[in-house]
Length: 283
Image (cartoon, rainbow, N blue to C red; front, top):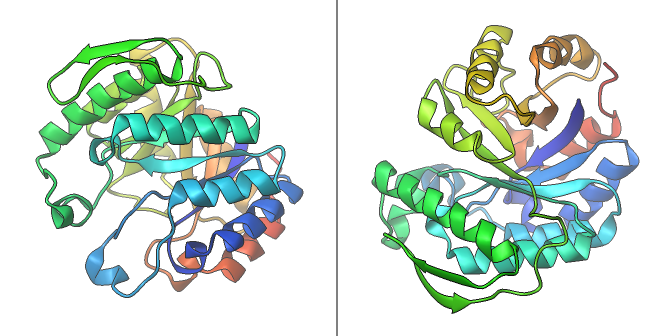
């Protein structure tokens, strides 16, 4: 199992220098990755007056400050982005980092705030269609080959985006979604990793082993080939191994350490640093 740190792109982490400082600590303490949220306003009522950073700028600062850890977003909502812009950002960061990017994606939310606030569509089915079509385009853009596409939501006429990504055939794509909804999991098994979220275990809450067993079992029903299975939550370093060990035994391949979403330490550098500096668990 590998271990990552998960942070929002607001509060203290609106300052990309704080993200770079944290990334150095993550690498020095022996963690394997750093992942950041990709939100514009998140929950407007809860985050009003709070500063946000652009996650790709923050990850650029992290890449320049480190040499080993994996870096990425959890998650980038392709449906509210232009795929060609995302393709350029990811390819640039992949080159800068020496091939250390993981591309995490999903529908994103809250939909009313993140999409509707800017006049975007809010129908989940339409957003899912845009996500699937956009992911297909990203895969083709990252290849460095010519792309022509006449789709429902995107049209491309003889475009080649260079350079191609350093990682071949492309950076790993991890897809997030809420279990027990099957469609996000079916989407994920077409790519490289699944990041299950749970209604019964919200952001920062360690998922029960029974839920992990359900979703991992479903993944294995759909796909026999290995893929990353990313679970997460907030742990106490004194008991983290006992908490995470059973999830690893079920088949989880990454543990993503996340602060509870409704706690004040979520977006505070000092609080996250304390957990980082204690190091990942030894299973």
